[in-house]
Image 1 (cartoon, rainbow, N blue to C red):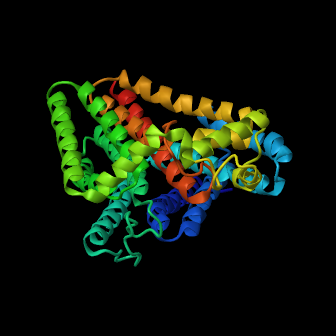
Image 2 (cartoon, helix red, strand yellow):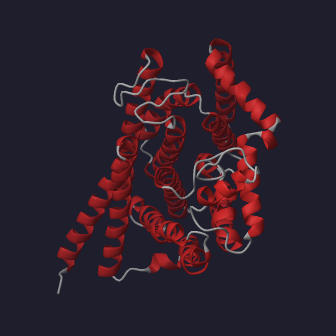
Image 3 (cartoon, rainbow, N blue to C red):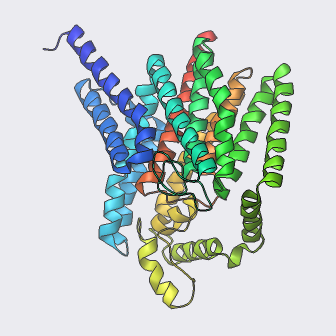
Amino acid sequence: MISAQSSSVFDRRMHIAATFLLCTIPAFLLFARGVADGALVLIGLLFLVRSAVYRDWYWVREVDIAILLMIWLILNLLVSPFAEFTGKSFGRSASWIRFVIFYAAVTRWILADEKAVRWVCKAFMITAAVAVADAFYQFFVGYSLLGGQLMTGRLTGPLDRPNIGIYLAKTGFATITLACALCISTSKQNIFRISLATFPFLLAIIFLSGERTASVLTLLAVGSGLIGLFFVGGKSRHAAAAIAALVVGGIGALLILSDRILARVMALGNVVSDYSNSIYGELTSLGWRLFAEHPITGTGMGNFGLVCPSYEAQGLISECHPHPHNFYVEWLSDTGLLGTLPWLAFVGILVWAGLRHFRNGDRQSLVAGLYFGTLVLSLFPLAATQSAFSNWPAIVAWNSIAVAVAALRLSEKHQIKSM
Protein backbone atom coordinates (compact mmCIF):
# COMPACT_ATOMS: atom_id res chain seq x y z
CA MET A 1 0.00 0.00 0.00
CA ILE A 2 1.08 3.57 -0.63
CA SER A 3 1.76 5.43 2.58
CA ALA A 4 0.04 8.74 3.26
CA GLN A 5 3.39 10.53 2.98
CA SER A 6 4.24 8.89 -0.36
CA SER A 7 0.76 9.66 -1.62
CA SER A 8 1.16 13.31 -0.67
CA VAL A 9 4.55 13.53 -2.42
CA PHE A 10 3.11 11.90 -5.54
CA ASP A 11 0.18 14.30 -5.63
CA ARG A 12 2.43 17.31 -5.08
CA ARG A 13 4.80 16.28 -7.87
CA MET A 14 1.92 15.78 -10.29
CA HIS A 15 0.53 19.18 -9.36
CA ILE A 16 3.93 20.83 -9.89
CA ALA A 17 4.25 19.17 -13.31
CA ALA A 18 0.75 20.28 -14.33
CA THR A 19 1.38 23.83 -13.07
CA PHE A 20 4.63 24.00 -15.05
CA LEU A 21 2.86 22.86 -18.22
CA LEU A 22 0.11 25.44 -17.73
CA CYS A 23 2.75 28.15 -17.27
CA THR A 24 4.32 27.23 -20.64
CA ILE A 25 1.18 27.19 -22.79
CA PRO A 26 1.13 30.94 -23.65
CA ALA A 27 4.82 30.77 -24.64
CA PHE A 28 4.27 27.64 -26.74
CA LEU A 29 1.33 29.32 -28.48
CA LEU A 30 3.72 32.00 -29.73
CA PHE A 31 6.22 29.64 -31.32
CA ALA A 32 4.97 26.02 -31.46
CA ARG A 33 1.23 25.42 -31.66
CA GLY A 34 1.62 21.64 -31.71
CA VAL A 35 3.70 21.71 -28.54
CA ALA A 36 1.06 23.90 -26.86
CA ASP A 37 -1.58 21.34 -27.77
CA GLY A 38 0.67 18.61 -26.38
CA ALA A 39 1.06 20.49 -23.09
CA LEU A 40 -2.71 20.86 -22.86
CA VAL A 41 -3.17 17.13 -23.44
CA LEU A 42 -0.53 16.25 -20.84
CA ILE A 43 -2.29 18.41 -18.25
CA GLY A 44 -5.49 16.49 -18.93
CA LEU A 45 -3.72 13.14 -18.66
CA LEU A 46 -2.09 14.09 -15.36
CA PHE A 47 -5.48 15.14 -14.03
CA LEU A 48 -7.09 11.86 -15.13
CA VAL A 49 -4.26 9.81 -13.56
CA ARG A 50 -4.63 11.71 -10.31
CA SER A 51 -8.39 11.24 -10.34
CA ALA A 52 -7.97 7.50 -10.94
CA VAL A 53 -5.26 7.01 -8.30
CA TYR A 54 -7.22 8.82 -5.60
CA ARG A 55 -10.64 7.81 -6.94
CA ASP A 56 -11.48 11.49 -6.91
CA TRP A 57 -14.09 11.92 -9.64
CA TYR A 58 -16.26 14.52 -7.93
CA TRP A 59 -15.55 16.99 -10.75
CA VAL A 60 -17.55 15.02 -13.33
CA ARG A 61 -20.67 15.87 -11.32
CA GLU A 62 -19.99 19.63 -11.36
CA VAL A 63 -22.70 21.20 -13.52
CA ASP A 64 -20.46 23.08 -15.97
CA ILE A 65 -18.17 20.10 -16.52
CA ALA A 66 -21.07 17.64 -16.72
CA ILE A 67 -22.61 19.73 -19.52
CA LEU A 68 -19.30 19.77 -21.41
CA LEU A 69 -19.02 16.00 -21.09
CA MET A 70 -22.59 15.66 -22.33
CA ILE A 71 -21.74 17.84 -25.34
CA TRP A 72 -18.78 15.61 -26.13
CA LEU A 73 -20.97 12.50 -26.05
CA ILE A 74 -23.54 14.20 -28.28
CA LEU A 75 -20.87 15.24 -30.77
CA ASN A 76 -19.54 11.69 -31.05
CA LEU A 77 -22.75 9.66 -30.81
CA LEU A 78 -25.30 11.90 -32.57
CA VAL A 79 -23.50 14.51 -34.69
CA SER A 80 -20.44 12.90 -36.28
CA PRO A 81 -22.19 9.68 -37.43
CA PHE A 82 -24.53 11.82 -39.57
CA ALA A 83 -21.92 14.32 -40.80
CA GLU A 84 -21.41 15.09 -44.48
CA PHE A 85 -17.77 14.05 -44.05
CA THR A 86 -17.71 11.67 -41.10
CA GLY A 87 -13.95 11.24 -40.89
CA LYS A 88 -13.33 14.97 -40.51
CA SER A 89 -16.12 15.30 -37.97
CA PHE A 90 -15.01 12.33 -35.86
CA GLY A 91 -11.46 13.70 -35.85
CA ARG A 92 -12.71 16.95 -34.36
CA SER A 93 -15.39 15.53 -32.06
CA ALA A 94 -13.26 12.76 -30.54
CA SER A 95 -10.33 15.06 -29.78
CA TRP A 96 -12.59 17.81 -28.36
CA ILE A 97 -12.51 15.96 -25.02
CA ARG A 98 -9.04 17.40 -24.40
CA PHE A 99 -10.51 20.87 -23.88
CA VAL A 100 -13.08 19.55 -21.41
CA ILE A 101 -10.49 17.75 -19.28
CA PHE A 102 -8.13 20.73 -19.50
CA TYR A 103 -10.88 23.07 -18.30
CA ALA A 104 -11.67 20.73 -15.41
CA ALA A 105 -7.99 20.36 -14.46
CA VAL A 106 -7.30 24.11 -14.43
CA THR A 107 -10.46 25.15 -12.58
CA ARG A 108 -10.73 22.29 -10.05
CA TRP A 109 -7.13 21.27 -9.45
CA ILE A 110 -4.21 23.37 -10.67
CA LEU A 111 -5.45 26.87 -9.82
CA ALA A 112 -7.18 25.79 -6.63
CA ASP A 113 -3.74 26.21 -5.04
CA GLU A 114 -2.63 29.79 -4.31
CA LYS A 115 1.06 29.04 -4.85
CA ALA A 116 0.25 27.70 -8.32
CA VAL A 117 -1.82 30.82 -8.99
CA ARG A 118 1.20 33.01 -8.21
CA TRP A 119 3.45 31.01 -10.54
CA VAL A 120 0.93 31.06 -13.36
CA CYS A 121 0.37 34.81 -13.00
CA LYS A 122 4.12 35.44 -13.15
CA ALA A 123 4.68 33.13 -16.12
CA PHE A 124 1.77 34.56 -18.10
CA MET A 125 2.88 38.14 -17.40
CA ILE A 126 6.47 37.43 -18.46
CA THR A 127 5.31 35.77 -21.67
CA ALA A 128 2.92 38.62 -22.46
CA ALA A 129 5.67 41.16 -21.73
CA VAL A 130 8.02 39.42 -24.18
CA ALA A 131 5.30 39.37 -26.84
CA VAL A 132 4.52 43.07 -26.24
CA ALA A 133 8.20 44.04 -26.45
CA ASP A 134 8.65 42.15 -29.71
CA ALA A 135 5.48 43.67 -31.16
CA PHE A 136 6.70 47.17 -30.27
CA TYR A 137 10.02 46.35 -31.94
CA GLN A 138 8.18 45.21 -35.06
CA PHE A 139 6.03 48.34 -35.06
CA PHE A 140 9.04 50.70 -34.99
CA VAL A 141 11.61 48.67 -36.94
CA GLY A 142 9.39 46.80 -39.38
CA TYR A 143 10.03 43.16 -38.52
CA SER A 144 9.71 40.81 -35.58
CA LEU A 145 12.95 40.25 -33.69
CA LEU A 146 11.84 36.83 -32.40
CA GLY A 147 9.90 35.54 -35.39
CA GLY A 148 11.55 37.45 -38.22
CA GLN A 149 8.25 38.33 -39.91
CA LEU A 150 7.95 41.59 -41.78
CA MET A 151 5.14 43.95 -40.86
CA THR A 152 2.64 44.08 -43.73
CA GLY A 153 -0.27 46.26 -42.65
CA ARG A 154 -0.93 44.44 -39.37
CA LEU A 155 1.33 43.45 -36.49
CA THR A 156 2.25 39.83 -36.01
CA GLY A 157 4.75 40.19 -33.18
CA PRO A 158 6.47 36.85 -32.67
CA LEU A 159 3.54 35.00 -34.30
CA ASP A 160 3.58 33.96 -37.95
CA ARG A 161 0.16 35.51 -38.64
CA PRO A 162 -1.63 38.71 -37.51
CA ASN A 163 -3.17 37.36 -34.32
CA ILE A 164 -1.01 39.05 -31.70
CA GLY A 165 -3.84 41.40 -30.69
CA ILE A 166 -6.40 38.74 -29.81
CA TYR A 167 -3.67 36.57 -28.24
CA LEU A 168 -2.61 39.39 -25.90
CA ALA A 169 -6.20 40.39 -25.17
CA LYS A 170 -7.31 36.93 -24.08
CA THR A 171 -4.10 36.07 -22.24
CA GLY A 172 -3.77 39.51 -20.63
CA PHE A 173 -7.34 39.84 -19.36
CA ALA A 174 -7.32 36.31 -17.97
CA THR A 175 -4.04 37.05 -16.17
CA ILE A 176 -5.15 40.34 -14.63
CA THR A 177 -8.40 38.69 -13.49
CA LEU A 178 -6.44 35.93 -11.79
CA ALA A 179 -4.01 38.45 -10.26
CA CYS A 180 -6.92 40.50 -8.90
CA ALA A 181 -8.51 37.42 -7.33
CA LEU A 182 -5.15 36.47 -5.80
CA CYS A 183 -4.77 39.98 -4.38
CA ILE A 184 -8.17 39.73 -2.69
CA SER A 185 -7.59 36.19 -1.47
CA THR A 186 -4.12 36.73 0.05
CA SER A 187 -3.98 40.53 0.53
CA LYS A 188 -0.64 40.44 -1.33
CA GLN A 189 -0.82 43.18 -3.93
CA ASN A 190 2.56 43.00 -5.69
CA ILE A 191 1.53 40.76 -8.59
CA PHE A 192 -1.68 42.68 -9.18
CA ARG A 193 0.16 46.02 -9.10
CA ILE A 194 2.71 44.76 -11.63
CA SER A 195 -0.06 43.55 -13.92
CA LEU A 196 -1.77 46.94 -13.68
CA ALA A 197 1.51 48.71 -14.49
CA THR A 198 2.14 46.61 -17.60
CA PHE A 199 -1.45 46.52 -18.81
CA PRO A 200 -1.37 49.88 -20.67
CA PHE A 201 1.49 48.61 -22.86
CA LEU A 202 -0.49 45.47 -23.63
CA LEU A 203 -3.53 47.57 -24.57
CA ALA A 204 -1.34 49.76 -26.79
CA ILE A 205 -0.21 46.75 -28.83
CA ILE A 206 -3.76 45.43 -29.14
CA PHE A 207 -4.91 48.74 -30.65
CA LEU A 208 -1.75 49.16 -32.73
CA SER A 209 -2.07 45.63 -34.09
CA GLY A 210 -4.72 46.64 -36.61
CA GLU A 211 -6.92 43.68 -35.62
CA ARG A 212 -10.45 45.05 -35.75
CA THR A 213 -12.15 42.28 -33.77
CA ALA A 214 -9.46 42.27 -31.10
CA SER A 215 -9.66 46.06 -30.71
CA VAL A 216 -13.46 46.22 -30.47
CA LEU A 217 -13.70 43.28 -28.08
CA THR A 218 -10.92 44.75 -25.95
CA LEU A 219 -12.89 48.00 -25.65
CA LEU A 220 -15.89 45.99 -24.46
CA ALA A 221 -13.68 44.06 -22.03
CA VAL A 222 -12.17 47.26 -20.64
CA GLY A 223 -15.67 48.65 -20.24
CA SER A 224 -16.71 45.55 -18.32
CA GLY A 225 -13.72 45.90 -16.00
CA LEU A 226 -14.51 49.57 -15.42
CA ILE A 227 -18.10 48.71 -14.54
CA GLY A 228 -16.75 46.28 -11.95
CA LEU A 229 -14.43 48.96 -10.59
CA PHE A 230 -17.33 51.45 -10.44
CA PHE A 231 -19.38 49.04 -8.33
CA VAL A 232 -16.56 48.78 -5.80
CA GLY A 233 -17.67 52.27 -4.77
CA GLY A 234 -15.88 55.15 -3.07
CA LYS A 235 -12.75 56.46 -4.75
CA SER A 236 -12.85 53.53 -7.17
CA ARG A 237 -15.62 55.32 -9.06
CA HIS A 238 -13.37 58.30 -9.67
CA ALA A 239 -10.60 55.93 -10.78
CA ALA A 240 -12.98 54.23 -13.21
CA ALA A 241 -13.97 57.56 -14.73
CA ALA A 242 -10.32 58.65 -15.04
CA ILE A 243 -9.28 55.40 -16.69
CA ALA A 244 -12.22 55.61 -19.11
CA ALA A 245 -11.17 59.15 -20.06
CA LEU A 246 -7.56 58.03 -20.61
CA VAL A 247 -8.64 55.13 -22.82
CA VAL A 248 -10.94 57.29 -24.91
CA GLY A 249 -8.28 60.00 -25.18
CA GLY A 250 -5.62 57.46 -26.15
CA ILE A 251 -7.78 55.94 -28.88
CA GLY A 252 -8.65 59.38 -30.20
CA ALA A 253 -4.97 60.33 -30.36
CA LEU A 254 -4.16 57.05 -32.11
CA LEU A 255 -6.79 57.67 -34.78
CA ILE A 256 -5.45 61.17 -35.37
CA LEU A 257 -1.78 60.16 -35.50
CA SER A 258 -2.01 56.84 -37.37
CA ASP A 259 -3.44 56.70 -40.87
CA ARG A 260 -3.05 52.92 -40.81
CA ILE A 261 -5.28 52.48 -37.75
CA LEU A 262 -7.77 55.02 -39.08
CA ALA A 263 -7.97 53.05 -42.32
CA ARG A 264 -8.68 49.86 -40.37
CA VAL A 265 -11.49 51.61 -38.46
CA MET A 266 -12.95 52.94 -41.70
CA ALA A 267 -12.79 49.46 -43.19
CA LEU A 268 -14.65 48.11 -40.16
CA GLY A 269 -17.31 50.77 -40.63
CA ASN A 270 -17.72 49.76 -44.26
CA VAL A 271 -18.13 46.10 -43.31
CA VAL A 272 -20.72 46.88 -40.63
CA SER A 273 -22.68 49.28 -42.83
CA ASP A 274 -22.89 46.75 -45.67
CA TYR A 275 -22.59 43.55 -43.67
CA SER A 276 -24.83 41.36 -45.83
CA ASN A 277 -22.67 41.99 -48.90
CA SER A 278 -19.35 41.54 -47.10
CA ILE A 279 -17.53 38.21 -46.98
CA TYR A 280 -18.40 37.96 -43.29
CA GLY A 281 -22.07 38.42 -44.10
CA GLU A 282 -21.85 35.79 -46.84
CA LEU A 283 -20.17 33.30 -44.51
CA THR A 284 -22.74 33.92 -41.78
CA SER A 285 -25.55 33.52 -44.31
CA LEU A 286 -24.10 30.22 -45.50
CA GLY A 287 -23.73 29.06 -41.91
CA TRP A 288 -27.40 29.77 -41.26
CA ARG A 289 -28.32 28.02 -44.52
CA LEU A 290 -26.38 24.90 -43.52
CA PHE A 291 -28.11 24.95 -40.14
CA ALA A 292 -31.51 25.32 -41.82
CA GLU A 293 -30.75 22.32 -44.04
CA HIS A 294 -29.42 20.21 -41.12
CA PRO A 295 -31.15 21.70 -38.04
CA ILE A 296 -30.74 18.72 -35.71
CA THR A 297 -27.16 17.52 -36.21
CA GLY A 298 -25.59 20.15 -38.47
CA THR A 299 -23.20 19.25 -41.27
CA GLY A 300 -20.56 17.83 -38.92
CA MET A 301 -17.64 19.33 -37.00
CA GLY A 302 -15.12 21.01 -39.30
CA ASN A 303 -17.32 20.32 -42.33
CA PHE A 304 -18.13 23.95 -43.18
CA GLY A 305 -15.08 24.38 -45.41
CA LEU A 306 -15.65 21.01 -47.05
CA VAL A 307 -19.27 21.59 -48.07
CA CYS A 308 -18.78 25.25 -48.98
CA PRO A 309 -17.37 24.70 -52.53
CA SER A 310 -20.67 23.25 -53.80
CA TYR A 311 -22.46 26.43 -52.66
CA GLU A 312 -19.73 28.55 -54.20
CA ALA A 313 -20.32 26.74 -57.50
CA GLN A 314 -23.99 27.72 -57.25
CA GLY A 315 -23.01 31.37 -56.79
CA LEU A 316 -24.34 31.53 -53.23
CA ILE A 317 -21.00 32.70 -51.82
CA SER A 318 -18.08 34.48 -53.46
CA GLU A 319 -15.28 32.62 -51.68
CA CYS A 320 -14.98 29.75 -49.21
CA HIS A 321 -13.34 29.72 -45.79
CA PRO A 322 -12.82 26.82 -43.34
CA HIS A 323 -15.41 28.24 -40.92
CA PRO A 324 -18.11 30.96 -40.81
CA HIS A 325 -16.08 33.34 -38.61
CA ASN A 326 -18.55 33.29 -35.72
CA PHE A 327 -18.48 30.88 -32.78
CA TYR A 328 -22.22 30.48 -32.51
CA VAL A 329 -22.94 30.22 -36.22
CA GLU A 330 -20.20 27.59 -36.41
CA TRP A 331 -21.81 25.62 -33.58
CA LEU A 332 -25.16 25.78 -35.40
CA SER A 333 -23.83 24.90 -38.85
CA ASP A 334 -21.48 22.16 -37.64
CA THR A 335 -23.43 20.60 -34.74
CA GLY A 336 -27.05 21.72 -35.14
CA LEU A 337 -29.37 22.13 -32.18
CA LEU A 338 -28.02 18.99 -30.51
CA GLY A 339 -24.61 20.58 -29.99
CA THR A 340 -25.57 24.26 -29.79
CA LEU A 341 -28.26 24.15 -27.09
CA PRO A 342 -26.07 22.50 -24.41
CA TRP A 343 -23.21 24.81 -25.42
CA LEU A 344 -25.49 27.79 -24.79
CA ALA A 345 -26.38 26.24 -21.41
CA PHE A 346 -22.65 26.10 -20.56
CA VAL A 347 -22.20 29.76 -21.57
CA GLY A 348 -25.27 30.64 -19.49
CA ILE A 349 -23.71 28.98 -16.43
CA LEU A 350 -20.53 31.04 -16.86
CA VAL A 351 -22.52 34.26 -17.22
CA TRP A 352 -24.73 33.51 -14.23
CA ALA A 353 -21.68 32.78 -12.07
CA GLY A 354 -20.31 36.25 -12.87
CA LEU A 355 -23.63 38.01 -12.25
CA ARG A 356 -23.97 36.23 -8.93
CA HIS A 357 -20.47 37.32 -7.96
CA PHE A 358 -21.40 40.99 -8.44
CA ARG A 359 -23.73 40.63 -5.46
CA ASN A 360 -20.78 40.12 -3.14
CA GLY A 361 -19.91 43.79 -3.56
CA ASP A 362 -16.69 45.54 -2.54
CA ARG A 363 -13.56 44.36 -4.41
CA GLN A 364 -15.37 41.20 -5.51
CA SER A 365 -17.18 43.39 -8.05
CA LEU A 366 -13.85 44.21 -9.72
CA VAL A 367 -13.08 40.50 -10.09
CA ALA A 368 -16.54 39.99 -11.59
CA GLY A 369 -16.05 42.87 -14.02
CA LEU A 370 -12.66 41.57 -15.17
CA TYR A 371 -14.11 38.06 -15.38
CA PHE A 372 -16.85 39.28 -17.73
CA GLY A 373 -14.24 41.17 -19.72
CA THR A 374 -12.34 37.92 -20.23
CA LEU A 375 -15.50 36.08 -21.28
CA VAL A 376 -16.43 38.83 -23.75
CA LEU A 377 -13.18 38.28 -25.63
CA SER A 378 -14.06 34.66 -26.39
CA LEU A 379 -17.84 34.44 -26.14
CA PHE A 380 -19.31 37.71 -27.43
CA PRO A 381 -21.97 36.53 -29.90
CA LEU A 382 -21.70 39.30 -32.52
CA ALA A 383 -17.94 39.13 -33.06
CA ALA A 384 -16.15 37.86 -36.14
CA THR A 385 -14.03 35.09 -34.65
CA GLN A 386 -11.66 32.29 -35.50
CA SER A 387 -12.85 28.70 -35.43
CA ALA A 388 -14.25 27.30 -32.19
CA PHE A 389 -12.73 23.89 -32.88
CA SER A 390 -9.27 24.24 -34.50
CA ASN A 391 -6.33 23.96 -32.14
CA TRP A 392 -4.66 27.41 -31.87
CA PRO A 393 -7.76 29.61 -31.40
CA ALA A 394 -9.45 26.94 -29.28
CA ILE A 395 -6.44 26.63 -26.97
CA VAL A 396 -6.22 30.42 -26.55
CA ALA A 397 -9.95 30.59 -25.80
CA TRP A 398 -10.09 27.62 -23.40
CA ASN A 399 -6.95 28.74 -21.57
CA SER A 400 -8.46 32.21 -21.11
CA ILE A 401 -11.89 30.94 -20.02
CA ALA A 402 -10.48 28.33 -17.63
CA VAL A 403 -8.16 30.83 -15.93
CA ALA A 404 -11.03 33.34 -15.56
CA VAL A 405 -13.32 30.70 -14.01
CA ALA A 406 -10.52 29.64 -11.66
CA ALA A 407 -10.09 33.30 -10.63
CA LEU A 408 -13.78 33.61 -9.85
CA ARG A 409 -13.68 30.41 -7.78
CA LEU A 410 -10.63 31.68 -5.88
CA SER A 411 -12.42 34.94 -5.12
CA GLU A 412 -15.57 33.10 -4.04
CA LYS A 413 -13.53 30.89 -1.73
CA HIS A 414 -12.13 33.97 0.00
CA GLN A 415 -15.64 35.41 0.29
CA ILE A 416 -16.87 32.24 2.04
CA LYS A 417 -13.90 32.23 4.44
CA SER A 418 -14.43 35.86 5.38
CA MET A 419 -18.11 35.41 6.21
